[in-house]
Image 1 (spheres, rainbow, N blue to C red):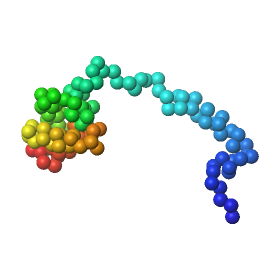
Image 2 (image 1 turned 30 degrees about the horizontal axis):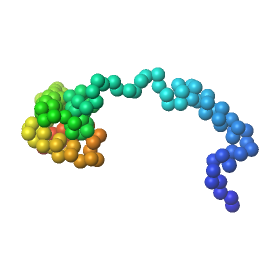
Image 3 (image 1 turned 90 degrees about the vertical axis):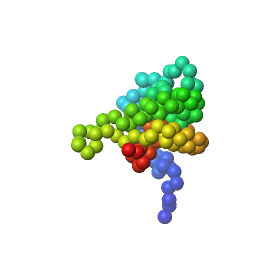
Image 4 (image 1 turned 90 degrees about the horizontal axis):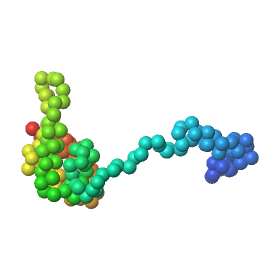
Length: 135
């Protein structure tokens, strides 16, 4: 019993093996260029060392680490506003849970001091903690 270890070996000598590159080209053209996009994904900013405050939904732990203490405090206020905004029309839950500002600051300081957390979104850290311990 022979085992095929390479997909091209299985197709060798068959018409399909010769059509595979052509098929790939047709798919790429049909789908818009093999993963390319006409939209630029480059984010243009004037100063990349501004820290937090560019966008509450984009700020991450790297931005937190680059920020000044004042910028961090402002970010905690923005996070509280964002998380505590109206979440529904039920009588039981009107607004999302929030954290005490001092506790939120300490939480973000603690998490963001870890290298592995450099890409963590601040709003996600805040909202998950608020859901567990917030009021």
